[in-house]
Length: 118
Image 1 (cartoon, rainbow, N blue to C red):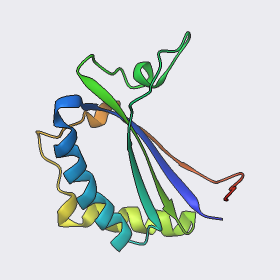
Image 2 (cartoon, helix red, strand yellow; image 1 turned 60 degrees about the vertical axis):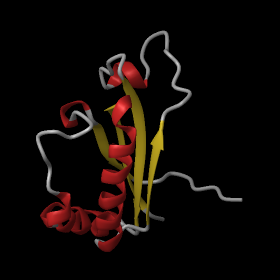
Image 3 (cartoon, helix red, strand yellow; image 1 turned 45 degrees about the vertical axis):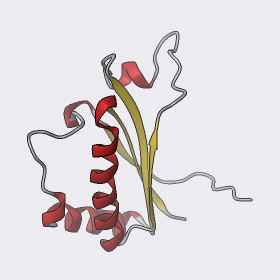
Image 4 (cartoon, one colour; image 1 turned 90 degrees about the vertical axis):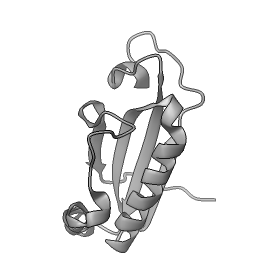
């Protein structure tokens, strides 16, 4: 089985295309560093919960949308090495004017329990 990095973050709604372009570059870097695939998803049906929800989890503001993303790696070891290599890649240079607030991003690595495919 693979290993999954998951992310949830608020992104300025007005900067969707800018985020998409940035995500394309980052996806290419992660693929070059060994990722199997990268998925970036823009929230279009993110309901408010009674206790918690995606928006509250990342303290999303009214002018922000939720992005839910994951990167599949062959293994945890490949992910650890790939992330290290990706963070050293000059294409991953962060700027002060990112379309999202990295401080409110939720991320983590996950070992799959079940993978079902059609």
